[in-house]
Length: 294
Image 1 (cartoon, rainbow, N blue to C red):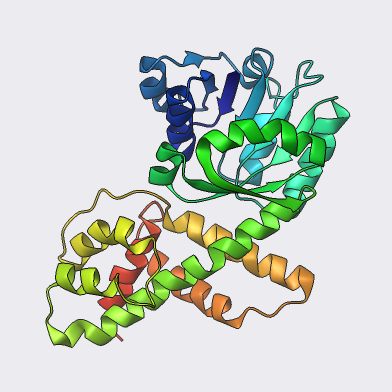
Image 2 (tube, one colour):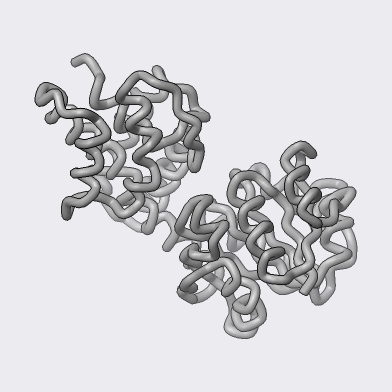
C-alpha cells in the first residue's frame, strides 16, 4: 500500500520508518524540510505540498502538534483538503481535544473522504517497533479499512466508538502519566538526604509496584539531570505535557468531572516551566522537583 504521512516529527518519522520496514511505500511532507531527510534517504518519496501528498497515496496519516497545526495542514491554500480527495482515507493521530477531531471529521467527510481518528499511547521506541496502543474513533466501515495500516504500528487497537471518543480516551490514558512524573519528583525528594547513587536508586524504584512502566525508558535522562549532566532524551516535551494537562482539565469541566490531583499537577508543571525550557523532556520534571528548594 502507498501511505502518506503529513507531519514527520519524532513520532511521525518513527511511524514512517516502521511502515517502510513492513513493506509499505511511503510519501511524506513536513513543514520543515530538514525533518524529512532521514526518511527520504531511507527510500521515502517527498511530496511538494500536503495537497500533492493527499492526491498521490492510498491513505493519509497525520500526526501533528495541536489544533492550529491541524487547521493549517488540512485547510491551508495547499492543504490536504484543497484538492479532490474523494474516496481517500484519512487517519488523524494527533493528541487534541475531542471537538477538534469531530469538527475535522465533518469537513473531511464533506469532501467525500473517510475519516478515522487514532491517537496513540507510547513514544518513539514503541512507534519504531510497532508496539503502540491505538485509540481509534471511527464508523465501523472506516475502522475496518484503517485497521490493516494501524496493525503495522500498534500491538493493540481499541475501537472506542465514533470519532471524538478516541481523543477522549487518549486524554484519560495520558492523565496518570502526567501525574506520575510529578509524583516521582516528590518521591526522589524524600530520598534526597539518603545519599544513594541516582542510578541505583532509580533502578530500584523502577522495580517497585508504584513505578510506571515507562520509567525504565526515561531513566537515563532523569539520572543525567540528577547528576547535573546534560541529557539528550527527547520523547515528549514539557510544553506538550502542559498542553495535554490543560486539555484534560477542560474535558473534565465539560463532563462535570472534578480532577483536583491534575489541577495541582498543572500548577507544579507550570512552576517547573519557569525554570526548565519548554522543549525539555517532560519526565525531567521529576529531576527538577527532587532538587527544588522550598
